[in-house]
Image 1 (tube, one colour):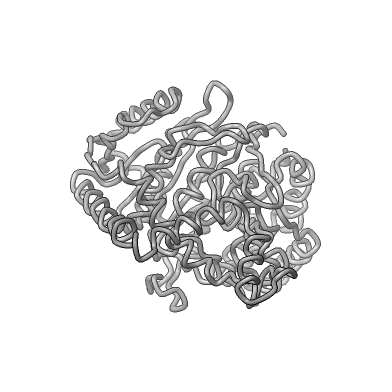
Image 2 (cartoon, rainbow, N blue to C red):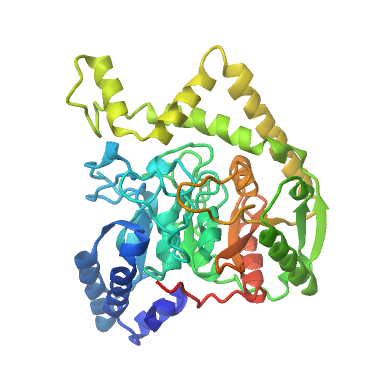
Amino acid sequence: MDEILKTRVKDLCAKIRSGQIKSTEIVKACFKRIKETETKVKAFLKLNEDRSLKQAAKADDKVKTGAECGFLEGVPIGIKDNIMVKGESMTSASKYLENYISPYDATVIEKLKEAGAIFAGRTNMDEFAMGGSTETSVYQKTANPWNIDYIPGGSSGGSAAAVSSGMVPFALGSDTGGSIRQPAGFCGIVGYKPSYGLISRYGVCALASSFDQIGVLSKTVKDASLLTSVIACGDYRDPVCETGEQTDYASEIYNQDILKTVRIGIPKQLSNYKADEEITKYFGEAINKLKLEGTTAVEIDIPAYKYVPALYKVIMCAEVSANIATFDGIRYGYRSPNGRNLNDEYAKSRAESLGYEVKKRILFGTYVLSAKNYYRCYHQAQRVRTLLINQIIDAYKKCDFIFSPATLQMPVKFGEKLSEECDIFLTAANLAGLPGITVPCSFTSSGMPMGVHFMGSRFSDAKLFQIADAFERISGFDINKYPNL
């Protein structure tokens, strides 16, 4: 594998600016790796090689002439295919949007363009981000680079597989119930979901609006903090996005004493779920490594964790039903040629263009929002969600971060199902609007990576990066190891 692709993003940026390496060299190395591995992994739905090379040449000219360079000038990135890039297709891996061209840039894309990043291509995903395996994409199934018979996780599986296999240095994803952090754990990379409201969602195809957040997939925590520094900002166009100045999360990430001063909370409820044997083993080793560095581990009790799968299903599907209501085949997207009247047009446009998983969630969401079931299902779920949030807030009186395995299962083969409890500790962060980060910690006996998860209190993102970076340094996980494809 080309040594350029093993260079961390911060070092790539420095070398580009100093003229030690050209952006065109990096882009060529990325597309060479893509050509070697994409037929097996299938991480991308669309590639922009010619345009990327032209952008790289412009970046090199900037450096040569001494012009001002952006924060990520000349560095390639993968973009999940539910994020709008003006003038490009955005399919959300669905037949419904196969001919849709984005009329404007998402806020995160505006920020990346200002920073000089190069968009290598659009990564595969579960259809409308509904799924946890990237199998519901109508175009292709993405494979886990460490074993192509297994799923990479989802819904941001394409982004995770692209970074894990070395096709791009980092990628954007979206996280509704663990959709960045779960595939990051399965693919042996870092996956970060910010506090709710830290990163604008303007220009991103909505799944469940009270859960959704744009986040980052990268090889290292430092790279994740670097990209977050670029895209995190206030935005009046996203009503829940907090206003404020941009923060440089990367500049103060190194804190050698943090492990001696923080307390990690281990959920008592971990023992209630059957985790894979090796996950339990390596998670225990991770706790011991932290303790040896002076970290205090305390047991915390959050009884409402048991409701997380049901809460997520009810509230998420209700919001899916409301958000997908705009997809009617009239204003944009797929329009059935077989409609005989307006109602028939609505029904057939959806029936012919949406996949099974999307239809299932729309139907269930409509059911829980019906007059008969609203208070019994949806309203009650929101009350229990508040209970969960309050219990997590109480837990932070005893600890600074909640520490758990990233998932309770290792990735499964295509066609097999993960348990409903697999992502329970990831999904809790979305329900509570809290930041979370998955960091790889070990390889199992089968050669597959596994990760651990840190969840912080709201807007503790800077400190979350610090502890994740510190753990990365003591974990023993080889970040320079790539799958042999």
